[in-house]
Length: 434
Image (cartoon, rainbow, N blue to C red; front, side):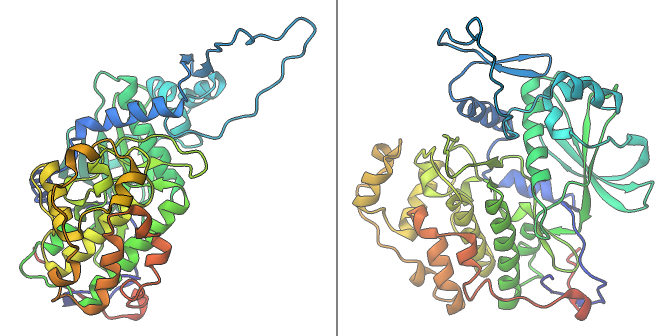
């Protein structure tokens, strides 16, 4: 099901995908205070060290071995060597055994990709680049280009994300492997689905294949010709929170929820896209994570204060910003620096309580703790919003992440309980602003 808006057409049902058309998208993202793309590999590197638990990891021909520091690494004479249980797949460290590496190269995967990202491609066969016809370039980033293309085999229009690697450095490849592993873990109507990978044994590049999407939420929301109705906003929020619920239940944090990463098709179906900053988490075995994630205007206060122990609350804060933005028709907190953004947050959401400062023990608390106390004024600031939206905005924009609760709880709110029914039974209205 999807949200409806605009001129009258008939729908045959929603479709899935990731990337949106429109050459204005990259210009919008340049104007946003985004996390620099060059930092993404550093995110992977720093969090990989945390995953290894401090042990030194030796990579040899695709095998991973931990150096033993206690002198008891080898069994004593007469003792049998005990086999270690096979570890669960780790999206941050993904080298295959030698036999799998050989099978992957024989199947057509480049050796450099299999050696570093073997687990990410395991069980898949690469598509050839000549089975796709590029139609137009629709996006560009520091390390990737996005093309609208036609699948020559099926005739379907797709989006191809071409990833460039700097001299095939393992860290760059490992960064992309983590995104692929996370995408393969997810399967939900409101989350983009990776359809396949395109490369060859002699290739130095990799394409990710997604279904093609028509719009993104930021583009639609910024159009003067479009004003979302309350039911449409509620429908979009229902889909966003449903997608987040799936991600969080699969132990995935997106860590960059914003309008340009929420793609929408012509039937009003919303999908969460761009998992380049996403990370897995284990609530029973927490590991420190970087605070240098989430685009500035949608970044929660705990990350601005340097938190490395956080959870689903970071995505829920961003969702709260999106909800308020859709009713306000503009971003609600637009700081130019981290200090200014934190100041704007405190002015709207109130200063943290003394109890919160004590229990959180955040690294930057002493530097950024406001000298004067700010009163929370969400209800007054958003008094023109539909009254039914204020409780959820108030919950999602709680200073204490524990008070934001969960996506499952948010789905029970009045705002996100609204849907417009299956598209196959509706004659929908779509306003195309270009």
